[in-house]
Length: 435
Image 1 (tube, rainbow, N blue to C red):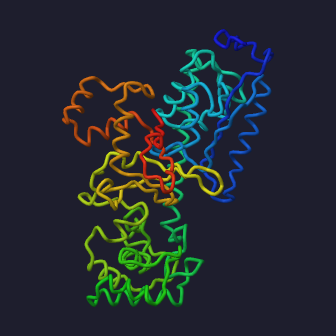
Image 2 (image 1 turned 135 degrees about the vertical axis):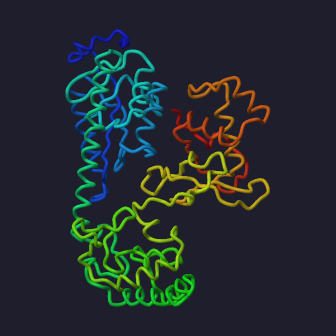
Image 3 (image 1 turned 180 degrees about the vertical axis):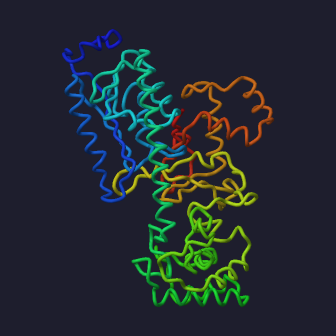
């Protein structure tokens, strides 16, 4: 047995036995081929790097099409890596003595992720971090400083790239170039010429709404005619409202909830596409709705009006539960599980997955399980203060405080599907990912 605690990092090129390490790979985008090739390529590079430095990859973790710059992005592969590093072995019992990755920014681009990763990596002595530049000692001051420098470089790159992308979109917008993305309802695939059938529907809807017709009646008429949106959905009052109040209907160009204007004249920027109605008609139809319903306040990137924010969550598990059902391709769904009305007194509400719709769980029992995980004597390393324990036992703790404690302890909690026909309660269905 090799004593990893006393491993000589300067002599790692000639080990007496390969060091077992795990590989992590991540790509921010995978919307073109959608086959995960970026993660596969990085994994191959990691295997070569591990071999060059006397290591052997015993497990691989990956996140395809998952960014790491924004808060709240779920990275199942990274979360599983952190969990396995903390317990010291993979699910199948392989011991872990290090991590190999093509670059630091694949692992972390935010301070919180850096702290989680290094805390898990150094939770046991003698581990190493390997990249194409060599072997790093994560316990040394230089190793931590190098990680901080990588984090600062990644943050700087993110800011520069975000600014460059925002400027690029602004320049396109002021030139009147149509929005990218799905084809807007009412226009052909070129986004410039009008769709002969859909454009007439939009024009008639605007005329009818100005004349006092309820928007729900317009939506029902479209449904009766068999109209579907450009993504295949059936129209409802909200989608029809968005279509007829969008500035593109009169040819105007907007960005992030504001009409763009020509700096020299102050006049609205006119797009290159054919308009459906005149600007006066568009302003008239917008005047028939409350401001919070307009495209300018609900469209992509538009800021929401103050006072129209969603109500605070009314259940403990909202925002923390993730679906653990397996998709047909064998991957875990990880979709958000949202509270909805239940069908029994025992479960007046349930948490169900909106993505795959293959997993649900009793709401009260899931919330109780979360509390028991949080306030258990031994768990993932989070110690709840005694004063908080006493306040909880005396029913002096409100939902908001409980949710704050859950957020400080869990990244999320995976819910495994139950057995069909088995109505018994199984607390092991909830698998927390601790911070």
